[in-house]
Length: 237
Length: 337
Image 1 (cartoon, rainbow over the protein chains, first blue to last red):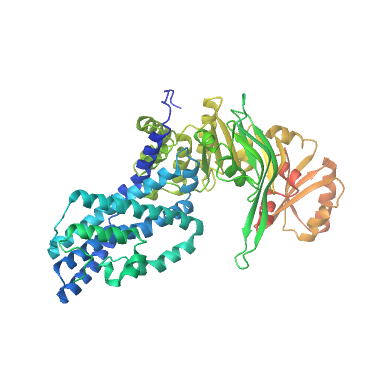
Image 2 (cartoon, rainbow over the protein chains, first blue to last red):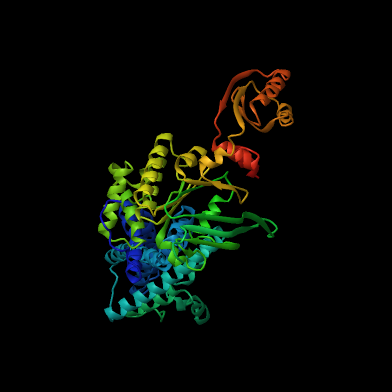
């Protein structure tokens, strides 16, 4: 084309890494260019968190409960990202014509999915961080972190499980199109309720808590709360 | 396989199962029937047919997006069904009216992203992007967000995306669809130049613009209702019609009953009619010039006024009418439910 010999294109793991980074790029850079997310994806979940904080304060609940609500509010950002970005993404890629280009490129579709997940995770971490910092600052959340290593490991494991679920949802959305979308919409509020975003899940009793544990977020949240609060979440007082 | 064809299909067929919305029963729709084609490396090959003829289905099979129901297909010497991973590094595709990429990214960022999916290093990617942006007249839009581009400019970006990876075989599915005359001309010039730069570069172009196929293609296959009806160079296809006399007539608006009488006239092989604003256009294919007198007489009997009459050389449109029996526009109308 330009008379200059080009090096052989990467294949194997190098191509995999290139694909992951390239597909994560629009997610991360898009956030910088679409500032509306600050309101919709940070302020709105934060308002819900505030609601729970005021209820707990009115009930004179232990201070750790304020922390439960703030951490839950931060993690809501990841769940919203899974439901409305990650899950619907392949469906939209198909609608706008990107999916055929992804499939016919010599890369792995798994690298595309991983790029989508990593991009979403990094972008959402920023939102979750904002909610966490704002909540901690406004409501004076008393953190007592037992082990930062364990906390990071639990967070990472939760993310892997959560975004794995997102990849599964993405495939289902693609397969069933709008039908799956309606199911996800119908599930949104019940999932909020049973995954213990704003209260300890064991308040429901063992059977329901056990069933709710099918959601990676439920277990992850529970474990993280045990690691960051002195009382832990599992013993409602 | 020694010296393989760029593209080869053997008895290729595809049947879609269309599920009915209410009853849930599957209905079959035949998209391709026993397609046998061979495209040599370096060839500019055209697939000409109306919407719904099976062109896009054929391309989807060749680019490994769709499995054939019957037969086999090879691209760059590899079986598209058995060895898709071997086919993919050698190909790319551009479709007309596609809106690929992300609106929030700039033109340069979108192109970089697609380059990464093919394993190109950053230096090579950006060198090629800058070169292609310049050639396509998009250099000043390199840092414009894709969502801010017009349809024509966005299609130019898509075309650059397809050529960025320097594929051995490129599939262009109606690449000039929706472009204005000037942009279409630029795109055609670019494609023609690209294919002649290196002798092994192969293009498969689908189009329903006859002039585009005539201008660009070394060989053309005429496809309708999933079947390949003819395959040869545009000049050979037209030469086969040279023994016929082809006339273009413009007359005052005609009634349908007049049209049916033309086909019964001696020496008249084909008549296609297009209703225009305030007049009718007739394309006549006659066995000899003297058959025209019968047509003119019929027009006079039906009080139709002759506005314009031209004898002309056969075009690919005439070849299409000769092979299919109706014009491209009529074939497209017939395809619509």
